Amino acid sequence: MPDATVCLTFDFDAISLWAARGLTSPGYVSRGEFGAHAVPRILRLLRERDISATFFIPGHTVETYPELCAAIAADGHEIGLHGYMHEPVSTLDAAKEAEASQRAQEAIRRVTGFEVRGNRTPSWDYTPDTVQVLLDLGCEYDSSLMATDYRPYQVRQGDRFRQDGPYEFGEPTSIVEIPVSWTLDDYPQFEYLRTDIVLPGLRRPDDVFANFLDDIDYMVREVPDGVCTLTFHPQVIGRGHRMLGLERFLDRCAQRPVRFQTCLDAARQFSGAVAASAR
Ligand SMILES: [Zn+2]
Image 1 (cartoon, protein in one colour):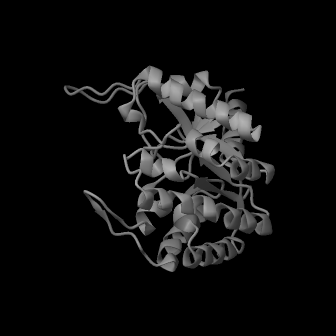
Image 2 (cartoon, rainbow, N blue to C red):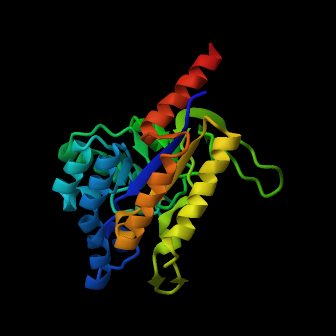
Image 3 (cartoon, rainbow, N blue to C red):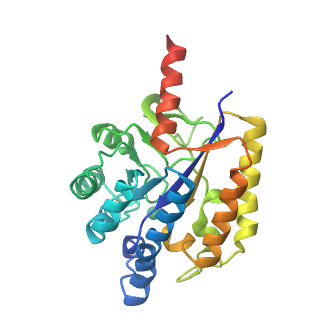
């Protein structure tokens, strides 16, 4: 029985996260800049632990911090799409959605040499056009949806919601979903935000990582060949006390039958199994 898989993912949003919300004053920009400040310490930790991770990087970050993004690729990590300016896809028409991802894909190729095969939508949502956009870009997987926890699955195309009847499920496509969850995302746990809403955040890292670890332990018991995806943001996880929490968490993972993989490797493993079962 193969080990369960943990995918560590880092959304290197930097300034684009705030810019997408119209927050471009120096205070908000500096919060995004901290992400760039924290990337080298995250890369060092991953190097020390010999872990390959996936970094979803908006085109704006790639063009603002080309050396850092090249360093991420040089360390052997996977780079995935995350919009150009962290645009929530639900605000875009089909042409703009395709244009944002194409521009980001070209920037990643130019700056890092990495040939992108995966995507995470900035809003963790889809439009009716998202699957086609991903297929046209040559993507093999996406990591934005939440229909399962430990089982990758095939993303559908052509779903229909009807007010007057049951939901109509479309056809499965070749795009593999590596599912995410807000419960396994550092942003709502830690980030303090006071705009028109208040996100309290600022939780103790050991409490948050205890939840993450319980989800991993449940996977090991119930779905021992499953995949559990954690979402981090350098500008959130990069603070000292959270980095120490992350280090302790990785120590505890090392005591369990889990291995770390990039999302692309996990997706390819899943699509290989689907192809084998169809034979
Ligand atoms: Zn993001």
